[in-house]
Structure formats: structure tokens, C-alpha cells
Amino acid sequence: MDQLNERTEALRLRIDAARVPRHIAIIMDGNGRWAKQHGLQRVEGHMNGVRGVREALTGATEIGVTHLTLYAFSTENWNRPSDEVNALMDLLVRTVVNELDELHENSVRLNAIGDLDSLPPGCRSTLEDAMRRTTGNTRITLTLALSYSARWELVRAARSIATAVRNGELDPDAIDERTVADHLATRNMPDPELLIRTSGEQRISNFLLWQIAYAELWFTPVLWPDFRREHLFQAVLDFQSRERRFGLISEQVTPA
Ligand code: FPP
Image 1 (tube, rainbow, N blue to C red):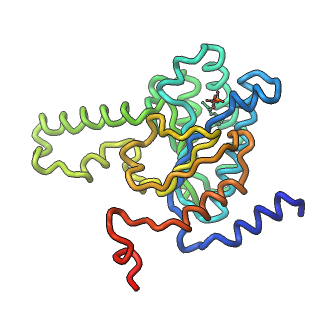
Image 2: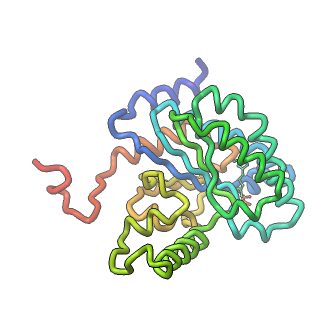
């Protein structure tokens, strides 16, 4: 075993299996800066970012995480130069096609959230085929947030709730947190308990704003193409060392 694997294994063994977050969300950031540091084109940073996706998924599966959600393309990313946008879409399609058999063999369910209608038709149909094929898989759900932003999702939820009220299907007084959650793209998922962002930036960038109300946040300077299982395990260990109070006081959470 090489040194990285030894270190990773040592971290993994320290994780308390009973307190693994069910859902981890990741803002994958730093592909462009990684490419620049290596004297490469930005798109090569994204291509190398696929390794980070593999590592995060493998690590999450190994420790029993049941939902992994990756911010792959934001609504705002459409404003990037068209070459980069096209290259990202191609990469997405190629990656899903190349990895699909392995995802399926490992019982990974592929899911996507966001304004999928805005994706190029080929990209959308590849994703839909992959989602259909893996729909019965139960080990882990890998959700790609594509053409996604939390404000887009909340506006859409508000419209759909208003429509239900107008149609007489919903009493406004009966609207509660559950109603809102049920109108979000994540309606069948537990909320993320841990949110990771790479590349040293410390902001949320319009990602899962409703769902991360109680999530623990973990930031690392590591650029996404350099993200390894080791980093995921560090984040989970840090998560397990924190006291999550949900607005209560310490003694209520861990009675003496
Ligand atoms: C952020 O880095 C990354 C993205 C906008 C795209 C993420 C895409 C991948 C990791 C490719 C593979 C993904 C899948 C799901 C197959 P950035 O470009 O914002 O980097 P910068 O801030 O350094 O410029």
C-alpha cells in the first residue's frame, strides 16, 4: 500500500459508522485554477475534475453515505464563454456514457436536479437514459445539479404551490415546511448534513439554500481535480467531531 492509501485507510478506520452523514453535498470548485497552475486550458481542469468525482463517489460509498449531490453546473455558469460551456456539456455526456456500466454494477442511482430543459437535447437524453437505467439501484444516489440554482428552485416551488392553491388542491393555511420541501427538486432526499466546498472559497453560491439550513460546512483549499477520498474522510471526521445542536443547548443534545 502506498503512503496516500495508508493515510486514507487510517482516516477511514477512524470514522464512526453509526454517525456517517446520510447526505453529503459538494461544491466542486477550482478546476480553472488547477488548469492554470499546470499550464493547461480550463477545459483540461474540468477533464481532470472527473477524477475528483470518482474519488468522492467511491469514498462516500465505502463509508455508507446514501446521497451524494454535486454542483456540476450552475444557472450562472451559462454566462461562461460558449467554448467552455460546450466542452463541459460534452464532458458530462462522455463521462456519463463511459461510467454508466460501472455505476450500475455498483448499485449507484444517477439523478439530476436543475432546469434540465435548458440542457442541449443530446445531453438531456443521455442523462434521462442513465437515470432510467439506474432507477432501481439503492446503494447510493448520485445527484448532479445541472443548470441549477437554489433561487431558481425556490421560485419554481412557489409557482407550483400557488398553482395548487389556485386549483383548490391546497389550503394556504395548510402550507408548512413539509409543503415547501415537497415542491423542491430534492423532495425525496434527506437534507444534506455536510456541505463541502473546495478551492478555498467560502460561500454557498446559490446551492441548496433551503436544504442546508442545518448542514455543517467544511471548506478546503484543495482544488477539485486534486480532491481524493482522503479529503472526504477528513471532512466526515471533522463533521463527527462537531456538536450539532439544531437550536438547542448542549445539555439537551448530549444529556449528562
Ligand atoms: C468549478 O471550477 C467546476 C465546474 C463549474 C464544473 C465541474 C465539472 C466537473 C468536475 C466535470 C465533471 C463532472 C461530472 C459530473 C461528470 P471552476 O471552473 O469554477 O474553477 P475556477 O474557480 O478555478 O475557475
